[in-house]
Figure 1 (cartoon, one colour):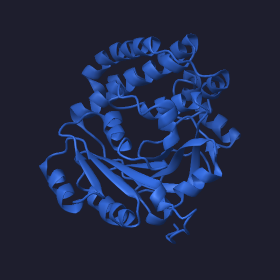
Figure 2 (tube, helix red, strand yellow):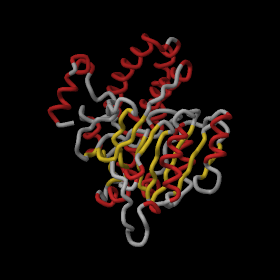
Figure 3 (cartoon, one colour):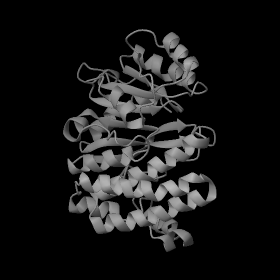
Length: 325
């Protein structure tokens, strides 16, 4: 990856046009590398750095106190886990920089690659959100494989992305009803209603170690995910399409439940119904071209737009290959 510092643009360097936000929650195995290799050097070049500690345990808080003392990097200690969307929003609201780059605390980004974000936005005027290529930190396997070319996609991967601040002005911040899950596709859809596209940029790569949560936390997150996706579908898609997609997803959720969710298998149908009602109460149907885009089976992530039979037979994979995804 490139590490050459770019030239200044209109007397303001690319670094001074950016804020980097990191949401931290009990990942002391990865966080020090991210702070040492990216956040501190970026702050020295003028990038505004904000770390939001989302109720981590004492060792993580002590590390952040020591490593990030001062105004840049700035650390916000929330004191409790307020969820992904609210935690990220606390960081996003702390700056008036032109572009906001977000990274999970178990993700790493090359310093030179960070410098490519403002020029990329400049090259794509209608890009409101850049979806970086996310690869596993150890295996190198892509976690959001959309091919080798820039293209409009259905949402961005939460581990690493960039948002044009104008999107927040036009469409608002992440929906804090999404404690965990679906906050990325919800913002992508809402931004689209304001004319902003989510663009996959394969040349900007983030390594994501995908450290799993376990036990009750894992189960609760899957239940949250089910509720939030149902809410998004019923909020932004026509009701018949939303109902079809939600039923397809519920079948997948229940398969998870039968396998390893235990009580989650009982909670999932209720969560989906609750999410659907939330979506109906906040209805904001996409424009017709947006509905067509998300109805396409090639749109990723899979939101129920791939038929169950096609999924079982693997035909959705063949369809994607034919379309060059």
